[in-house]
Structure formats: C-alpha cells, structure tokens
Length: 307
Length: 132
Image (cartoon, rainbow over all chains, first blue to last red; front, side, top):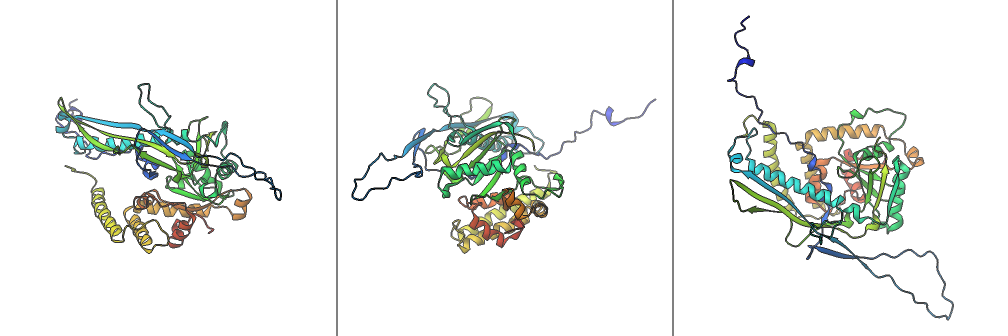
C-alpha cells in the first residue's frame, strides 16, 4: 500500500549534528604536576642532591669524671640522584583536515595543539608517580624514578586483599613519624578512589545508614587530623595502582618532592618543518623528580580494592 | 563558528576571562601577597577567591554545602572516634576552589592547621566536622 513519503525514504535530508563537543577525558586530573613545587633547574641529565639523617640515641655511655673523650665516625651527607626524562607530544594535522568544517566549529590545528599539552601534562603526571628509573645508556630513553620508585625505607607489602582499616592508616602515619623529625611527617595521602571512600567512612556514625547517592561531590579535598599531630590531606589519584593485589597507598610529605626541569627545557611548543601537505610540531619537556628525603614517605601495597 | 553552542557556557567563559583579569590585577595591586596567614592582603585575596568561586561555580558550591551538611549529620561522637582511633575531619575543599587558591598561592599548605583554623573560622561552611 503506498504511504507517500517518510523520512527513511528521503536521501536529501540534512544531517542533525550538534555543534557541541563534550570532552570528558580522564586525563585532566593531575594533582602532582599542578601542585608540586619546582626545584632549581638541573644542569645535566643526572641530577643529584644530598640527604642527611642520623638515628636517635638509644643508649648513652656517660663520660667518667676526668676521663678521655671517645670519638667515633660521624654520619656524612649522602648523594641521591635521578635522571631527567624527555617527554614529547607531537602533533601533525593535514592541511585538508584544517580546511574541513567540523562539528564544533573549532580550528582542528588549534584543537589538537590544545589537547596535546593536556596529554603532555598527563604523561608528566604518570611519570612523576610511576616512573621506573632507566639510565638510558643502552640507547633507550632515560626514565626518571617516580615517587613510587623514590620510596625505599618505609615500604610494606601487605598480603593481597588486606582490608584498609583505621589501624592501617594510623600505622602508616606512625611509620613516617618514626623515621623523621616531627616537622617532616607525611601530610598527604595519595590513594585510589576506593581507599578515599573507605577513609571517609571511618568517622561516620554506624547507627545511621546513609545512601551513598546522597553525596554529590566525590572529588573534594578532605583534610583529617591524624593522631600524630599533623593534618593530613587525602587526594584520590587516578594513577595510583588500584588493581587487586597491587593496590597502593602513599603517605607523602608534599614539600619534600619537587619537579625539576633541565635548564631551558620547561614544556614548550616547537613548530617543525613541514615537508608534505600538513603542519606539524611538538610539545617537549625534559624533567625529573627530586625527593629531598624519602624517609618521610610511606608506601604500602596489597590492600583490598573493594569498599 | 560556534553556532548552537551552549550560550550559558560561552557567557561563563567570557566572565571567567574578565574575572581572571580582575584577580590578577588585584593580586598585583596587593603587592603579590605571600601565603602568610598573618597578612591582611593574603586574606583579602582568599576572600575574593572564595566569593568568586561561589558565584562562578554555583553548582559545585550548592553540592558542596549539601555534602558538608550530610557529612556532619553522620559524624560519630568524639569519644567513639577516639575509642576507635578514627581521624576527625578538619576541613574540606571543593576541587575548583582548591585549584583557584593554588594558582595564586602555590606554596600555601592547605593542610596546615594554623591556616585551617583561620580559614574555617572565616568560612564555617568548609568545616567538615561538628567539633572544632
């Protein structure tokens, strides 16, 4: 039976394409790269600094009246180091693409450049936390040791699936308190989202049930009064390992970590010569992580990744 | 070329440009105050940041207020928390306000207790606990 014409039959209809581009990429939350301080520029790819720490006295030999002094070897500062890493984010956009009208009406070249700097920052963030030190002498790129790799004193691997409890939290802070002077105790907990949610639940009244959906913000920055004097900020971080068995919790002293750029190598854009039908260039930087005193930090792994 | 785009977000972007310009000029006029809680100019700048945050991020401000009320309503008693070695919340920062403050005061330790005490006495809404 003839039905005249319906939209399915009409090849001449214009497309309905919204001119809104919603960018919800998860690569914009970069706490460390945004908030860590910047150390004085490095002058070569192997950056070094010195640390000094002496243990507390655990026994005292009294000097006898009229007796000789006893001299012993003294602790000397020791060197720590890290390698700078070259991080790049190249962009190449064809001239045809640049001339093409796109849905949101933006200039594809400018758009891709804007996205590239975000990706560069995100790469820096990942390295700052998870970089695994490589000297680069074998022809591969140098890689810096991230905060994860810098911590060597207070490292504990819990049995996989261990529940993250108030006791664990207090033990972590005590580890930091034991290792350094009170002005350097950890003041930042870097955790996966699930641990942040667990910590938030510690202080709630167990006699009242609260529907989790009642809460509207999940990324607010919470500060707690730890029992060892310090106030501690809890930051949920997307690059902290959160898989079962490897879930990691870091307690850090924020001002003892800095990012350091090789001199003149802060993030910058450089146009590259075009030899074809395109424009191209690259965002590039070379930086490392300076850990002035890793003893203040604590790394524990193996917690359960469920609430 | 942004035909059909969300006009309210465009207006917000324009406002943000004007606001950024204003805040930078104010910061310079105040002599680029350091993160010193004893400095009046530092608190003038913080006041401006908090006030403008609540205007430009209305939804976040609204959600934040509602969340803080909820959190305070379910907070355990101090004696129960002490008994179980549970940490007391001291302050909560909405993410956008946190970043705004950090832009002007990168060295400010937002977990410093002296700063927190002054901050929550000025703005009790950020106090995440029923107990001070």
